Length: 402
Image (cartoon, rainbow, N blue to C red; front, side):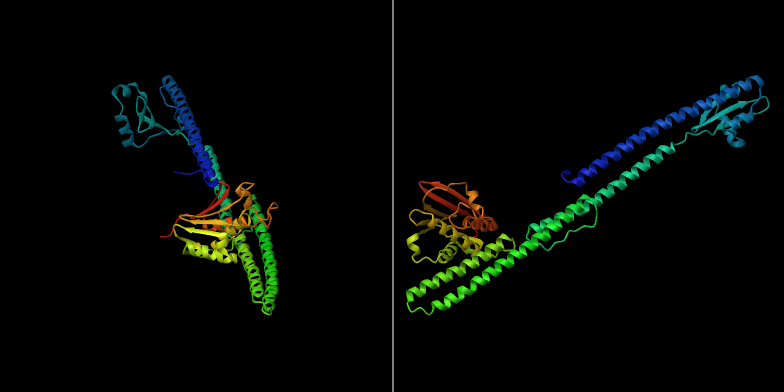
């Protein structure tokens, strides 16, 4: 079934209908002209024959000059003339003056006292050249116009591919056009926008990398200085703090990659328990069992980017502990992972918490934003419900790995 959703298909349909209507109209005009021309030729022949007949009845002779002037040709070939005369009936021959048709030719038979003559009318119906020329000219114009319009739409396909490439995170595209039509203007504006976005992205990456680099230096120095502290407990605590800061910087680097769409997932099959263990380790809690109640009913396999999914679940557990009334979370692993905490329900719709740097957030407002982006990359589902004074966050993968 032909789809007429595209501009190309609609233009093709319009021109096809226009050409069909042109052909029909030209045929109607052509047929009408031929019919009128034939009527005119017949009327002319009848008038000439009537004059010849009247002249013959008065003078008993033939006005050869008049017949020649009216485009009647005398057939002089005896064999051909005899063949035509033999086709007449005795009655027609006896009249001495007769009009008859022979193979679509109009013939005039005249018999005098001394001879028989056959004249052929050379008047022919002429095709309307002006109608043919005008019709062919319009048809040629429509075809040329159609080709020009279709060719002018070709850059749209290229622009569509460039936009698709751009949406996948590739900014190394160029769609500048030297033409002057509206499509070229759109392509040039898009090309200019891509260049500006590319420059902004580059500037942002340089700024973030510079900030992360500058932060890594004092963290490294702080870890060296902490080694000089004689108290092992204080030393360990400082080590944990600097390790946490270093981990946060790495997380920000991953967030920047995800945000800029330049991150490619490294998907491999993992057990859900292994991902959870990594997430809990990333929290760096002194006593994880005190804050986390873990129940694994079905330790299923799933394909994921281990580091990213661990980061997402870590942020979800961290939020659960931070915003719970008892600083505890329950984690249940069955065919999905469910993280719940005791506390008040979310004040707004869940979608509102996916906005980065929310002004109403106690922190930076990046927790759920990071979680949602990572789960979207994996094409995992994320749901929230509130029951019996508990918040439930559920992560469901599209399919499990056997």
